[in-house]
Amino acid sequence: MTIKVAIAGARGKMGREAVNTVLKRDGMELVAALDYKYVGESLAELEIFSPNLNVPIYTDLTNLIQETTPDVLIDLTNPQSVYEHTKVALLHNVRPVVGTTGFTEEQLAELTHLAEEQQVGCIIAPNFAIGAILMMKFAQEAAKYLPNVEIIEMHHDRKLDAPSGTGVKTAQMIREVREGRKQGHPSEHETIDGARGADFDGMRIHSVRLPGLVAHQQVLFGGEGQLLTIRHDSFNRESFMDGVMYCVETVMSLDRLVYGLENIL
Image (tube, rainbow, N blue to C red; front, side, top):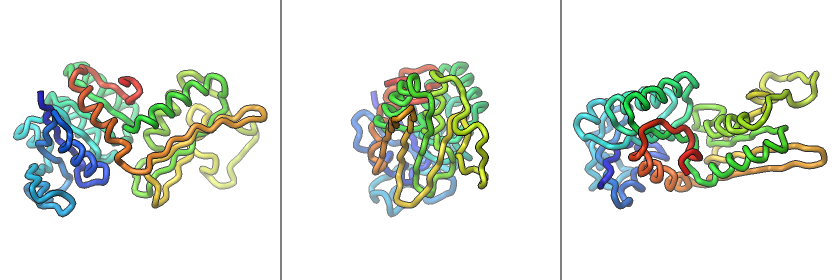
């Protein structure tokens, strides 16, 4: 069976990588691209793609689905668009594979209910890099023994949300095994607002945004006389593609929403 794939955000850096990866993947066919503005009739008209790439571009997801009938929508857009894209895809029985972050807890709950109601698979992955998933799992295990933890996530300066989805997901996984606690001096105060980072159940999450970075995170665990650091670095966007392709193949057999690649590995 050939999996028909549509990609939202094909012109972005992650999107371009996903386009090229789907084209090379046996058992997959790229049938359409979704863009927030009209940029031509097909990807072939864009300089960043091959002139032979006659894949139609749409600005409306419903029209895309009706005319090209994809099995899977890979969404690599932005926090402002991804919720609506995911909802529309589920309502039309198209399986979303979402790498965009920025969902609220209420949106995740609604989409989880909708996927169950429609019995349509959906995967939302804050990070597609296999090494990043292992970093989060190792951090969750370490938190059982070293509960004083801070997270430093570092990304390129074009990223829109902070903290990153990976940073939040890491904190959520740690919260499952760690009792909430206030860290630092009981009487500490910030002389500049935000100096201690975001407070998540007593943990602190710090966001760094600089040109030259791609996606990096370190989780620091402090104990008496010791420091444990668990770190992952993505140096290019190829590092995410094995995870994306795994999700495209796996979502075909799901009938529910899965949040986090660690839940299907």
